[in-house]
Image 1 (tube, rainbow, N blue to C red):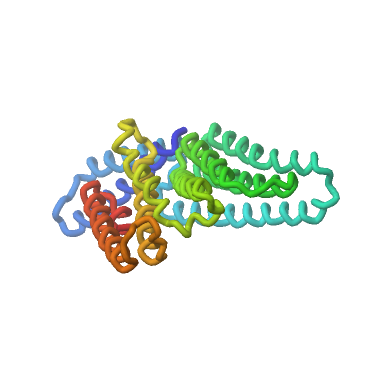
Image 2: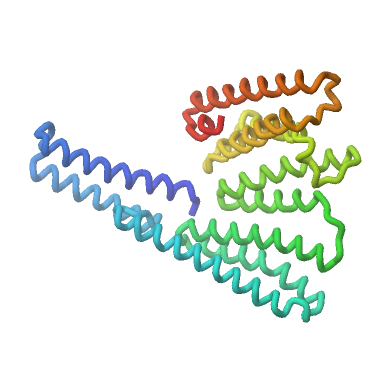
Amino acid sequence: MDANPRREAQRRADRIAQFRAELDELETERALVLTPELRSRLDAHLDDVLSNLRQKFGIDATESAKRISWAVRVASLLGAVALASAVVLFLQRFWGTMPAPVQVAILAAAPLILLAAAGWTFSRGVDFYYTSLLCLAAAVAFIVELNAMGTVMNLVPSSLALLAWALFAVLVAYAYGLRLLLGAGLLLICGYTASAWTAAQGGFWSAFLDQPELLIPPAAVLYAVPWIAHRRDPHDFAFVYRTCGAAAGLVGILLFSTSGHLCCWGVTYRTAQVFCQVAGIVLSAGVIFHGFRLGRSGLVNLG
């Protein structure tokens, strides 16, 4: 089951509820009065539609069902956090006494088990919220795994960890249609690109924020991806690419205008600062205009 059809089914259920509320209002105002036969036929049809949507996609047909669903989701999230914390604390209690092969096996198995659980819930048609929660937990477990593995193996910190995290997040996001995970992966790609260029210049890779202008080129590429890749986008990933590209690029310009890192410009600090601020205003206005053209309030708010 794809995530997008369920969202469309939920939107249709919401439209049916709004239609019924407006129809009741029109009948109260005597603007539109249906005969009892027509109203019963209409109600029967809408009930059949909602019943089919519930059975096929597991949507919430009423406000009370939505409240119950959200309560269950919050409880599930809190339970997952509590369980993960308990497992981590339990492992920390005995971690030092375990041999290195056992530590490596546990670290490698954790994200794989979570991914397998996500695949099982996805194939069984369980509420997509739980699949996304398991995928997010797998991504966190993968990040923890690489950090802990580096400690176990006494490895030197490297920017390649950012690339590994980004690839994991992007691949899982495309596998299950997760926009939040895709956004995290794209921002990590921007960070990796900037850190790799910082290391190539002789600096330490984690100091890439000292040169925030390095975030601008990958951000521009991300923003242009929806124009370059003309393909069907059932999960609305184009919006994620544009949002991440605009956010990383504008933040890079903002930091650059106040950082004082102007060794490559050959101009005074004040001149470069004014230029960056003007460029930031112009690009922000461009993002707002583009958001209006696309009808995306998220881009407008970001700009």
